[in-house]
Image 1 (cartoon, rainbow, N blue to C red):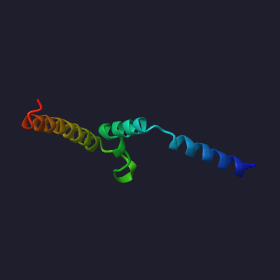
Image 2 (image 1 turned 90 degrees about the vertical axis):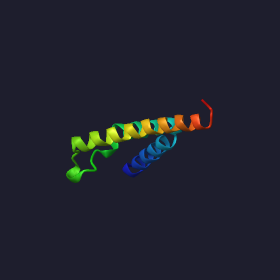
Image 3 (image 1 turned 120 degrees about the vertical axis):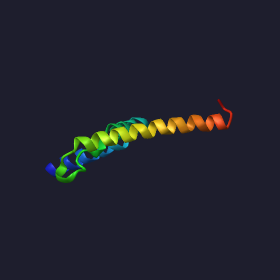
Image 4 (image 1 turned 45 degrees about the vertical axis):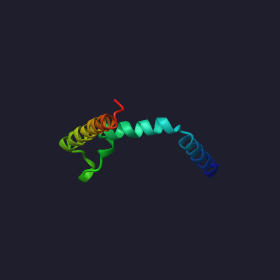
Length: 81
């Protein structure tokens, strides 16, 4: 009985994981990336250095700002704006 129950749970978990919509899972991963949650546990000993976490957040925010500025600059060069 236990083996069938475990197999059934595994199948249901797989169906739930595979049926996630593309947008919601991508949005969750993007949110985790920009808030630095994906960095938790990467430091030695499983702990997270707060300075490293904030450094990642600041760096990732600056990269988004840079992409926006470069996109605007490209649009100006192509006379789209």
